[in-house]
Length: 223
Ligand code: C5P
Image (cartoon, rainbow, N blue to C red):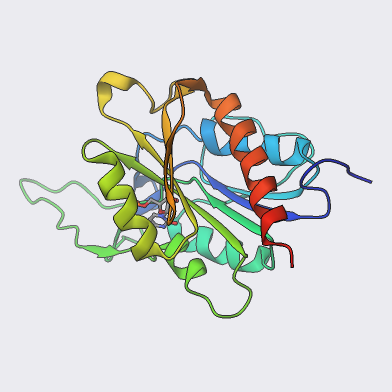
């Protein structure tokens, strides 16, 4: 039996990038390492939660004590999240690709003299917004991330409202900071009631503090 501030809770975490196929051998992706999301999954398990980690393709081992579901594309990630519901907390740290290729090739696209393939893009589902706006089975506490390169807090506030989540963890990913792929992170916690800025911390410490805070918020929400 697990003990800790999140004992008895089911936490769903998304992590990593998504890969959106161009054809069977090529894809569109981004620079997310999955380090922050995986650290959160681990910290939630250590806090006693039952954790389902839904991970895009990453170079990290599956955290121990966590059920890890591996997916590639945004649409697969959404399906896996829906399958994992119900949950008490959703923490959506994945860097989901905004677009996928609408006309992905069923066979490898061949190079032919001078002619360039025409890729047309279509929008991916927004997993955080989709789950946050559910009327049935919405996890009572929904957490999103906002990776921004400017106007970090203002954008995070807008995101909180637009996505319908309860908390946004906002960070500055402008290249000088080295957040993408790095081991530390400087974040702001943005809720409807205000903004709290944390000092620069190791991603594992951001994870532990975030999980501790979620435990408090879950406690506050009890009738
Ligand atoms: O809009 P933006 O990508 O900046 O929002 C970031 C937040 O939304 C993250 O929590 C991310 O996991 C989530 N998201 C999502 N599905 C998308 C795009 C973003 O769940 N298609």
